[in-house]
Amino acid sequence: MSALTVLAIIVHIVLSIALIYFALHRMQKNAELGGAFGSGAAHTMFGREKGFDPAAKMALWTGVLFMISSFIVTALLAR
Image 1 (cartoon, rainbow, N blue to C red):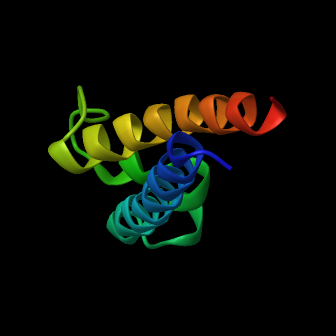
Image 2: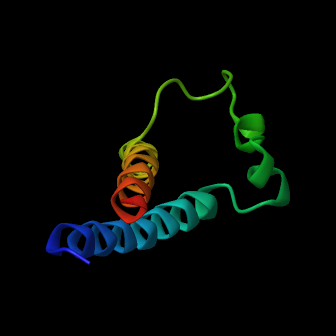
């Protein structure tokens, strides 16, 4: 295995741990059972919240980076 492959795997592991952390941290905001299915905005007075808060943006970008990292690790291990 080359050094680039090992580095990509380490980055992939770090991203997976970060994604788990941000997803669990985000779930605590909507801790009820319906929050797992997206109904966390049912108790707002003027409809759902518009846009993402910083924690949701971090979870989104961590997920995007994890997906890109998955493709890169797969390509590096396939050669």
